[in-house]
Image (cartoon, rainbow, N blue to C red; front, side, top):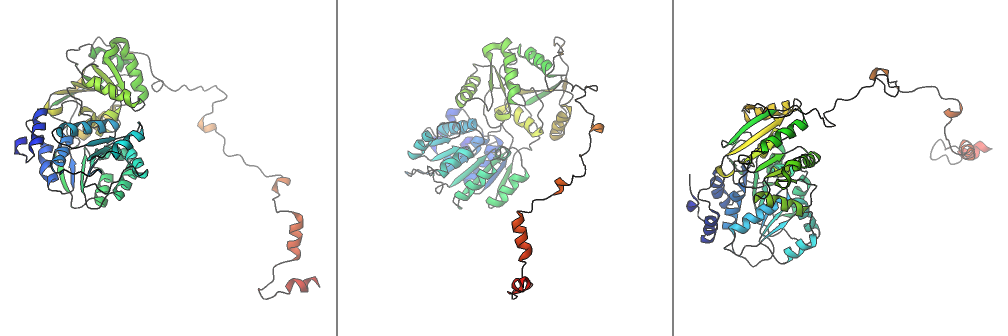
Length: 450
Protein backbone atom coordinates (compact mmCIF):
# COMPACT_ATOMS: atom_id res chain seq x y z
CA UNK A 1 0.00 0.00 0.00
CA UNK A 2 1.20 3.51 -0.77
CA UNK A 3 1.90 6.13 1.87
CA UNK A 4 0.89 9.78 1.97
CA UNK A 5 4.50 10.58 1.10
CA UNK A 6 3.78 9.15 -2.37
CA UNK A 7 1.05 11.74 -2.90
CA UNK A 8 2.21 14.92 -4.60
CA UNK A 9 0.90 17.33 -2.00
CA UNK A 10 2.13 20.67 -0.69
CA UNK A 11 4.29 20.85 2.42
CA UNK A 12 1.54 22.52 4.46
CA UNK A 13 -0.89 19.66 3.67
CA UNK A 14 1.77 17.04 4.39
CA UNK A 15 2.44 18.64 7.79
CA UNK A 16 -1.29 18.65 8.57
CA UNK A 17 -1.59 14.96 7.64
CA UNK A 18 1.39 14.17 9.88
CA UNK A 19 -0.25 16.08 12.75
CA UNK A 20 -3.33 13.89 12.37
CA UNK A 21 -1.16 10.79 12.68
CA UNK A 22 -2.12 9.26 9.33
CA UNK A 23 0.71 7.23 7.81
CA UNK A 24 -1.02 5.26 5.05
CA UNK A 25 -4.06 6.14 2.95
CA UNK A 26 -7.09 3.87 2.90
CA UNK A 27 -7.93 2.13 -0.41
CA UNK A 28 -10.57 4.72 -1.33
CA UNK A 29 -8.13 7.57 -0.59
CA UNK A 30 -5.42 5.94 -2.66
CA UNK A 31 -7.79 5.35 -5.60
CA UNK A 32 -9.52 8.74 -5.48
CA UNK A 33 -6.55 11.10 -5.16
CA UNK A 34 -5.10 10.86 -8.71
CA UNK A 35 -8.54 10.80 -10.37
CA UNK A 36 -9.81 13.89 -8.53
CA UNK A 37 -6.53 15.68 -9.19
CA UNK A 38 -6.97 14.98 -12.93
CA UNK A 39 -10.11 17.13 -12.96
CA UNK A 40 -12.42 14.38 -14.22
CA UNK A 41 -15.94 13.83 -12.92
CA UNK A 42 -15.77 11.09 -10.27
CA UNK A 43 -18.31 8.71 -8.74
CA UNK A 44 -16.97 6.78 -5.75
CA UNK A 45 -18.75 3.76 -4.29
CA UNK A 46 -17.27 2.86 -0.93
CA UNK A 47 -18.59 1.66 2.39
CA UNK A 48 -19.11 4.01 5.27
CA UNK A 49 -16.12 4.19 7.59
CA UNK A 50 -13.49 3.83 4.85
CA UNK A 51 -12.21 7.41 4.89
CA UNK A 52 -14.35 8.94 2.12
CA UNK A 53 -14.22 12.46 3.58
CA UNK A 54 -10.44 12.70 3.41
CA UNK A 55 -10.51 10.96 0.02
CA UNK A 56 -12.02 14.08 -1.56
CA UNK A 57 -10.92 16.84 0.86
CA UNK A 58 -7.17 16.21 0.44
CA UNK A 59 -7.03 16.49 -3.40
CA UNK A 60 -9.49 19.41 -3.38
CA UNK A 61 -7.33 21.43 -1.00
CA UNK A 62 -4.21 20.50 -2.97
CA UNK A 63 -5.75 21.84 -6.19
CA UNK A 64 -7.18 25.02 -4.60
CA UNK A 65 -4.97 27.99 -5.50
CA UNK A 66 -4.67 31.09 -3.34
CA UNK A 67 -7.25 33.74 -4.19
CA UNK A 68 -8.49 37.02 -2.72
CA UNK A 69 -11.95 36.44 -4.18
CA UNK A 70 -14.76 36.37 -1.60
CA UNK A 71 -17.10 34.03 -3.43
CA UNK A 72 -16.68 30.27 -2.82
CA UNK A 73 -14.87 27.98 -5.25
CA UNK A 74 -15.71 24.58 -3.73
CA UNK A 75 -19.20 23.41 -2.75
CA UNK A 76 -19.72 20.25 -0.68
CA UNK A 77 -23.30 19.01 -0.17
CA UNK A 78 -24.11 16.57 2.64
CA UNK A 79 -27.41 15.26 4.09
CA UNK A 80 -27.24 16.24 7.79
CA UNK A 81 -26.17 19.05 10.06
CA UNK A 82 -23.82 16.73 11.95
CA UNK A 83 -22.04 15.76 8.75
CA UNK A 84 -21.62 19.44 7.85
CA UNK A 85 -19.81 20.01 11.14
CA UNK A 86 -17.66 16.92 10.65
CA UNK A 87 -16.55 17.87 7.11
CA UNK A 88 -15.86 21.47 8.21
CA UNK A 89 -13.70 20.13 11.02
CA UNK A 90 -11.80 17.84 8.61
CA UNK A 91 -11.11 20.76 6.23
CA UNK A 92 -9.98 23.00 9.08
CA UNK A 93 -7.55 20.32 10.33
CA UNK A 94 -6.08 19.69 6.88
CA UNK A 95 -5.96 23.42 6.10
CA UNK A 96 -4.49 24.52 9.43
CA UNK A 97 -1.22 25.64 7.80
CA UNK A 98 -2.91 27.54 4.97
CA UNK A 99 -5.24 30.51 4.59
CA UNK A 100 -8.23 28.42 3.40
CA UNK A 101 -11.57 29.60 4.79
CA UNK A 102 -14.48 27.16 5.15
CA UNK A 103 -18.11 27.92 6.08
CA UNK A 104 -20.73 25.44 7.28
CA UNK A 105 -24.31 26.04 6.15
CA UNK A 106 -27.27 24.12 7.66
CA UNK A 107 -30.80 24.61 8.91
CA UNK A 108 -32.02 24.86 12.48
CA UNK A 109 -29.91 27.94 13.21
CA UNK A 110 -30.06 31.69 12.55
CA UNK A 111 -29.82 32.32 8.81
CA UNK A 112 -28.64 35.92 9.34
CA UNK A 113 -25.50 34.67 11.10
CA UNK A 114 -24.74 32.52 8.08
CA UNK A 115 -25.40 35.45 5.72
CA UNK A 116 -22.86 37.52 7.66
CA UNK A 117 -20.29 34.70 7.46
CA UNK A 118 -20.74 34.46 3.70
CA UNK A 119 -20.46 38.22 3.29
CA UNK A 120 -17.00 38.16 4.87
CA UNK A 121 -15.84 35.71 2.19
CA UNK A 122 -15.09 31.99 2.04
CA UNK A 123 -13.24 29.47 -0.15
CA UNK A 124 -15.21 26.32 0.68
CA UNK A 125 -18.87 25.86 1.56
CA UNK A 126 -20.13 22.71 3.27
CA UNK A 127 -23.92 22.71 3.28
CA UNK A 128 -27.19 20.86 3.48
CA UNK A 129 -29.20 21.47 0.27
CA UNK A 130 -32.27 23.04 1.91
CA UNK A 131 -30.50 25.90 3.70
CA UNK A 132 -28.10 26.43 0.79
CA UNK A 133 -31.03 26.86 -1.59
CA UNK A 134 -32.66 29.35 0.81
CA UNK A 135 -29.49 31.44 0.86
CA UNK A 136 -29.23 31.39 -2.94
CA UNK A 137 -32.88 32.51 -3.29
CA UNK A 138 -32.29 35.36 -0.84
CA UNK A 139 -29.26 36.45 -2.94
CA UNK A 140 -26.91 36.05 0.03
CA UNK A 141 -24.88 33.52 -1.95
CA UNK A 142 -23.68 33.32 -5.56
CA UNK A 143 -22.69 29.97 -7.06
CA UNK A 144 -21.21 31.18 -10.36
CA UNK A 145 -17.65 30.94 -9.03
CA UNK A 146 -17.91 27.25 -8.02
CA UNK A 147 -15.21 25.15 -9.72
CA UNK A 148 -15.65 21.88 -7.77
CA UNK A 149 -18.90 20.27 -6.59
CA UNK A 150 -18.91 17.37 -4.11
CA UNK A 151 -22.06 15.44 -3.20
CA UNK A 152 -21.39 13.16 -0.25
CA UNK A 153 -23.82 10.40 0.81
CA UNK A 154 -25.92 11.17 -2.27
CA UNK A 155 -28.20 8.17 -1.72
CA UNK A 156 -29.19 9.57 1.68
CA UNK A 157 -29.84 13.01 0.16
CA UNK A 158 -32.23 11.43 -2.34
CA UNK A 159 -33.88 9.29 0.35
CA UNK A 160 -34.49 12.45 2.41
CA UNK A 161 -36.28 14.09 -0.51
CA UNK A 162 -33.59 16.58 -1.59
CA UNK A 163 -33.78 15.75 -5.31
CA UNK A 164 -35.71 18.96 -6.10
CA UNK A 165 -33.12 21.17 -4.38
CA UNK A 166 -30.23 19.22 -5.92
CA UNK A 167 -31.54 19.64 -9.45
CA UNK A 168 -32.17 23.35 -8.91
CA UNK A 169 -28.68 23.82 -7.46
CA UNK A 170 -27.20 22.03 -10.50
CA UNK A 171 -28.98 24.52 -12.75
CA UNK A 172 -27.50 27.47 -10.85
CA UNK A 173 -23.92 26.20 -11.01
CA UNK A 174 -21.56 27.02 -13.89
CA UNK A 175 -21.51 24.32 -16.57
CA UNK A 176 -17.73 24.11 -16.51
CA UNK A 177 -16.98 22.44 -13.18
CA UNK A 178 -15.73 19.18 -11.73
CA UNK A 179 -18.38 16.91 -10.18
CA UNK A 180 -17.44 14.49 -7.40
CA UNK A 181 -19.99 12.11 -5.92
CA UNK A 182 -19.58 9.59 -3.10
CA UNK A 183 -22.10 7.04 -1.89
CA UNK A 184 -22.28 3.68 -0.13
CA UNK A 185 -24.89 2.38 -2.59
CA UNK A 186 -25.70 2.83 -6.27
CA UNK A 187 -29.37 3.29 -7.16
CA UNK A 188 -31.40 4.13 -10.27
CA UNK A 189 -31.93 7.69 -8.98
CA UNK A 190 -28.17 8.19 -8.67
CA UNK A 191 -27.66 6.82 -12.18
CA UNK A 192 -30.23 9.33 -13.45
CA UNK A 193 -28.33 12.23 -11.82
CA UNK A 194 -25.08 11.03 -13.35
CA UNK A 195 -26.63 10.79 -16.83
CA UNK A 196 -28.17 14.27 -16.59
CA UNK A 197 -25.36 16.30 -15.02
CA UNK A 198 -22.02 14.46 -15.20
CA UNK A 199 -19.63 14.28 -18.16
CA UNK A 200 -17.06 11.55 -18.83
CA UNK A 201 -17.48 9.98 -15.40
CA UNK A 202 -14.78 7.79 -13.93
CA UNK A 203 -16.11 5.34 -11.33
CA UNK A 204 -14.19 4.15 -8.27
CA UNK A 205 -15.62 1.08 -6.57
CA UNK A 206 -13.82 -0.01 -3.43
CA UNK A 207 -16.31 -2.39 -1.84
CA UNK A 208 -19.74 -3.73 -2.64
CA UNK A 209 -22.37 -2.18 -0.38
CA UNK A 210 -23.40 -5.52 1.04
CA UNK A 211 -19.89 -6.71 1.87
CA UNK A 212 -19.34 -6.71 5.65
CA UNK A 213 -16.12 -5.19 6.86
CA UNK A 214 -13.62 -7.89 7.81
CA UNK A 215 -12.72 -6.25 11.10
CA UNK A 216 -16.30 -6.23 12.45
CA UNK A 217 -17.47 -9.36 14.26
CA UNK A 218 -21.24 -9.92 14.19
CA UNK A 219 -23.81 -11.78 16.28
CA UNK A 220 -27.60 -11.99 16.56
CA UNK A 221 -29.98 -12.59 19.47
CA UNK A 222 -33.54 -13.89 18.95
CA UNK A 223 -35.61 -11.92 21.49
CA UNK A 224 -39.38 -12.29 22.04
CA UNK A 225 -40.38 -8.64 22.63
CA UNK A 226 -39.36 -5.02 23.28
CA UNK A 227 -38.99 -5.15 27.06
CA UNK A 228 -36.95 -8.36 26.90
CA UNK A 229 -34.67 -6.51 24.46
CA UNK A 230 -34.29 -3.78 27.10
CA UNK A 231 -33.40 -6.43 29.73
CA UNK A 232 -30.81 -7.95 27.39
CA UNK A 233 -29.31 -4.57 26.52
CA UNK A 234 -29.09 -3.54 30.16
CA UNK A 235 -27.47 -6.89 31.06
CA UNK A 236 -24.81 -6.61 28.34
CA UNK A 237 -23.95 -3.02 29.24
CA UNK A 238 -23.09 -4.04 32.79
CA UNK A 239 -19.75 -5.26 31.44
CA UNK A 240 -18.21 -1.81 31.09
CA UNK A 241 -14.74 -3.24 30.41
CA UNK A 242 -16.00 -4.91 27.20
CA UNK A 243 -18.76 -2.49 26.20
CA UNK A 244 -16.58 0.59 26.46
CA UNK A 245 -18.32 2.82 23.90
CA UNK A 246 -21.68 1.65 22.60
CA UNK A 247 -23.95 3.04 19.88
CA UNK A 248 -27.53 1.72 20.16
CA UNK A 249 -29.74 2.02 17.06
CA UNK A 250 -33.54 1.96 17.32
CA UNK A 251 -36.16 2.34 14.61
CA UNK A 252 -37.81 5.65 15.55
CA UNK A 253 -37.60 8.71 17.80
CA UNK A 254 -40.33 7.61 20.23
CA UNK A 255 -38.59 4.29 20.88
CA UNK A 256 -35.23 6.04 21.23
CA UNK A 257 -36.61 8.22 24.03
CA UNK A 258 -38.19 5.19 25.75
CA UNK A 259 -35.02 3.07 25.60
CA UNK A 260 -33.00 6.03 26.90
CA UNK A 261 -35.38 6.55 29.84
CA UNK A 262 -35.25 2.86 30.77
CA UNK A 263 -31.44 2.78 30.58
CA UNK A 264 -31.14 5.90 32.70
CA UNK A 265 -32.61 3.99 35.65
CA UNK A 266 -29.47 1.83 35.75
CA UNK A 267 -26.81 3.90 34.00
CA UNK A 268 -27.72 7.52 34.72
CA UNK A 269 -25.33 9.98 33.07
CA UNK A 270 -23.50 7.18 31.24
CA UNK A 271 -26.35 7.16 28.69
CA UNK A 272 -27.37 9.83 26.19
CA UNK A 273 -29.88 10.06 23.33
CA UNK A 274 -29.91 11.87 20.00
CA UNK A 275 -32.42 12.13 17.15
CA UNK A 276 -33.85 14.74 14.79
CA UNK A 277 -36.37 16.13 17.32
CA UNK A 278 -33.56 17.28 19.60
CA UNK A 279 -32.27 20.84 19.27
CA UNK A 280 -29.09 21.53 17.35
CA UNK A 281 -27.15 22.48 20.50
CA UNK A 282 -28.35 19.33 22.28
CA UNK A 283 -27.30 17.15 19.33
CA UNK A 284 -23.86 18.73 19.05
CA UNK A 285 -23.29 18.47 22.80
CA UNK A 286 -24.41 14.81 22.94
CA UNK A 287 -22.14 13.84 20.03
CA UNK A 288 -19.18 15.68 21.55
CA UNK A 289 -19.64 14.10 24.99
CA UNK A 290 -19.98 10.64 23.46
CA UNK A 291 -16.96 11.14 21.22
CA UNK A 292 -14.88 12.33 24.18
CA UNK A 293 -15.95 9.37 26.30
CA UNK A 294 -18.03 11.33 28.85
CA UNK A 295 -21.06 9.22 27.85
CA UNK A 296 -20.47 5.49 27.33
CA UNK A 297 -23.86 4.74 25.71
CA UNK A 298 -25.56 6.71 22.93
CA UNK A 299 -29.09 5.79 21.83
CA UNK A 300 -30.03 7.05 18.38
CA UNK A 301 -32.02 6.57 15.20
CA UNK A 302 -30.62 6.15 11.68
CA UNK A 303 -29.94 9.89 11.46
CA UNK A 304 -26.52 8.95 12.91
CA UNK A 305 -25.88 5.96 10.65
CA UNK A 306 -24.13 7.91 7.88
CA UNK A 307 -21.00 9.96 7.78
CA UNK A 308 -20.34 10.68 11.43
CA UNK A 309 -16.75 9.83 12.21
CA UNK A 310 -17.13 8.85 15.85
CA UNK A 311 -13.94 7.28 17.08
CA UNK A 312 -13.24 4.19 19.18
CA UNK A 313 -16.79 2.78 19.15
CA UNK A 314 -16.43 -0.73 20.56
CA UNK A 315 -19.97 -1.97 19.84
CA UNK A 316 -22.92 -1.16 17.60
CA UNK A 317 -26.13 -2.70 18.93
CA UNK A 318 -29.07 -2.92 16.54
CA UNK A 319 -31.88 -2.80 19.09
CA UNK A 320 -34.35 -3.00 16.19
CA UNK A 321 -33.64 -4.82 12.93
CA UNK A 322 -33.66 -2.24 10.11
CA UNK A 323 -36.33 -2.63 7.44
CA UNK A 324 -33.87 -1.87 4.65
CA UNK A 325 -30.81 -4.14 4.70
CA UNK A 326 -28.49 -1.37 3.42
CA UNK A 327 -29.18 0.55 6.65
CA UNK A 328 -27.68 -2.33 8.61
CA UNK A 329 -24.42 -1.87 6.71
CA UNK A 330 -24.39 1.86 7.44
CA UNK A 331 -25.09 1.23 11.12
CA UNK A 332 -22.34 -1.31 11.70
CA UNK A 333 -19.92 0.90 9.79
CA UNK A 334 -19.84 3.17 12.86
CA UNK A 335 -17.53 0.63 14.52
CA UNK A 336 -14.38 -1.00 13.18
CA UNK A 337 -13.21 2.29 11.68
CA UNK A 338 -9.64 3.01 10.60
CA UNK A 339 -8.89 -0.73 10.49
CA UNK A 340 -9.68 -1.21 14.20
CA UNK A 341 -11.69 -4.14 15.57
CA UNK A 342 -15.39 -3.68 16.25
CA UNK A 343 -18.46 -5.69 17.21
CA UNK A 344 -22.04 -5.55 15.95
CA UNK A 345 -24.99 -7.19 17.70
CA UNK A 346 -28.48 -7.59 16.24
CA UNK A 347 -31.66 -8.04 18.34
CA UNK A 348 -34.59 -9.43 16.36
CA UNK A 349 -38.11 -10.64 17.14
CA UNK A 350 -40.15 -13.15 15.15
CA UNK A 351 -41.70 -10.28 13.18
CA UNK A 352 -38.22 -8.95 12.35
CA UNK A 353 -36.85 -12.31 11.25
CA UNK A 354 -37.59 -11.60 7.57
CA UNK A 355 -35.62 -8.34 7.78
CA UNK A 356 -32.67 -10.24 9.26
CA UNK A 357 -32.80 -12.73 6.39
CA UNK A 358 -32.79 -9.84 3.88
CA UNK A 359 -29.64 -8.47 5.54
CA UNK A 360 -27.95 -11.87 5.35
CA UNK A 361 -28.96 -12.22 1.71
CA UNK A 362 -27.44 -8.82 0.90
CA UNK A 363 -24.19 -9.63 2.70
CA UNK A 364 -24.12 -13.26 1.53
CA UNK A 365 -23.20 -14.00 5.12
CA UNK A 366 -25.04 -15.80 7.92
CA UNK A 367 -24.94 -13.76 11.13
CA UNK A 368 -23.92 -16.14 13.95
CA UNK A 369 -26.71 -16.93 16.42
CA UNK A 370 -26.06 -16.13 20.09
CA UNK A 371 -27.96 -17.69 23.00
CA UNK A 372 -29.69 -15.43 25.50
CA UNK A 373 -27.81 -15.31 28.82
CA UNK A 374 -29.56 -17.30 31.55
CA UNK A 375 -29.79 -14.18 33.73
CA UNK A 376 -32.12 -12.47 31.23
CA UNK A 377 -35.70 -12.11 32.44
CA UNK A 378 -38.27 -12.78 29.70
CA UNK A 379 -40.73 -9.92 30.09
CA UNK A 380 -44.48 -10.37 29.73
CA UNK A 381 -44.96 -6.64 29.27
CA UNK A 382 -45.83 -5.71 25.70
CA UNK A 383 -45.83 -2.44 23.85
CA UNK A 384 -48.96 -1.19 22.08
CA UNK A 385 -47.65 -2.53 18.75
CA UNK A 386 -46.97 -5.96 20.23
CA UNK A 387 -50.32 -6.44 21.95
CA UNK A 388 -52.80 -8.64 20.03
CA UNK A 389 -55.83 -6.84 18.65
CA UNK A 390 -58.92 -7.39 20.80
CA UNK A 391 -61.86 -8.88 18.92
CA UNK A 392 -65.31 -8.51 20.55
CA UNK A 393 -67.73 -10.78 18.67
CA UNK A 394 -70.72 -9.85 20.82
CA UNK A 395 -70.17 -6.11 20.66
CA UNK A 396 -73.17 -4.65 18.76
CA UNK A 397 -70.96 -1.78 17.61
CA UNK A 398 -68.51 -4.16 15.94
CA UNK A 399 -69.41 -5.80 12.66
CA UNK A 400 -67.79 -8.64 10.80
CA UNK A 401 -66.67 -7.95 7.27
CA UNK A 402 -69.34 -10.36 5.95
CA UNK A 403 -72.09 -8.43 7.74
CA UNK A 404 -71.14 -5.01 6.43
CA UNK A 405 -74.13 -3.77 4.41
CA UNK A 406 -73.66 -2.72 0.82
CA UNK A 407 -74.28 0.80 -0.46
CA UNK A 408 -77.77 2.03 0.40
CA UNK A 409 -80.23 2.38 -2.57
CA UNK A 410 -83.87 3.33 -2.89
CA UNK A 411 -86.12 5.09 -5.37
CA UNK A 412 -86.36 8.83 -4.91
CA UNK A 413 -89.73 10.33 -4.11
CA UNK A 414 -91.40 12.52 -6.76
CA UNK A 415 -90.49 15.78 -5.08
CA UNK A 416 -86.84 14.75 -4.84
CA UNK A 417 -86.71 13.90 -8.53
CA UNK A 418 -87.15 17.54 -9.40
CA UNK A 419 -84.10 19.39 -10.72
CA UNK A 420 -83.30 23.06 -10.48
CA UNK A 421 -84.02 24.52 -13.92
CA UNK A 422 -83.87 28.18 -12.97
CA UNK A 423 -86.79 30.61 -12.59
CA UNK A 424 -90.06 29.97 -14.45
CA UNK A 425 -89.89 33.41 -16.05
CA UNK A 426 -86.63 32.48 -17.79
CA UNK A 427 -88.05 29.17 -18.98
CA UNK A 428 -91.13 30.85 -20.50
CA UNK A 429 -88.97 33.39 -22.35
CA UNK A 430 -86.74 30.63 -23.61
CA UNK A 431 -89.72 28.67 -24.95
CA UNK A 432 -91.23 31.77 -26.60
CA UNK A 433 -88.05 33.10 -28.19
CA UNK A 434 -86.32 30.03 -29.58
CA UNK A 435 -83.07 30.25 -31.50
CA UNK A 436 -83.42 30.77 -35.29
CA UNK A 437 -83.19 27.68 -37.45
CA UNK A 438 -80.27 29.24 -39.25
CA UNK A 439 -77.95 32.13 -38.51
CA UNK A 440 -79.40 34.15 -41.37
CA UNK A 441 -83.06 33.68 -40.44
CA UNK A 442 -83.30 36.75 -38.22
CA UNK A 443 -87.08 37.04 -38.69
CA UNK A 444 -87.84 33.52 -37.42
CA UNK A 445 -89.19 34.57 -34.01
CA UNK A 446 -91.00 37.57 -35.48
CA UNK A 447 -92.90 35.41 -37.99
CA UNK A 448 -93.78 32.91 -35.28
CA UNK A 449 -95.34 35.60 -33.09
CA UNK A 450 -97.58 36.67 -35.96
